[in-house]
Length: 157
Image 1 (tube, helix red, strand yellow):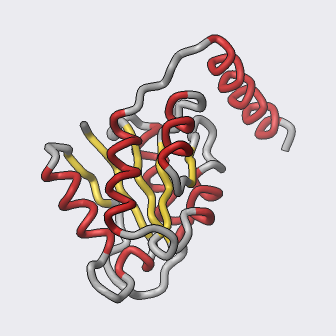
Image 2: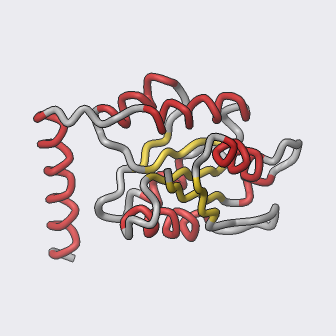
């Protein structure tokens, strides 16, 4: 699978292991192709810049799904969700990830370096990548409604 991966400086926070390179290495070891859009070090950066790059890759279909990492997963999910067609889910439990994919057709997983261990992040990613959208009528209806609301908000601004 083609994936887009982005993070802010939290992806390189000490102590080791630095999550960003470790998670990318893990994904590649599973046979995924990963486009790492940055950042690449510990210098302070603005997470919306990297949420934008991953969202753009998903929307342009150069990536099937995206993974974003910041300190908590919250800020970067808010930034990613500013893009119409993106359904970024900040998740910390298995059930959250399963429901985000199965019910909400989440296309970006957002995880927190300061919230979850590296092994927990890998586990959440595994669930994200292996869970399919149910396609249930009520879920499709709700996603369509969100997309319509996003279009209305943009045209009335």
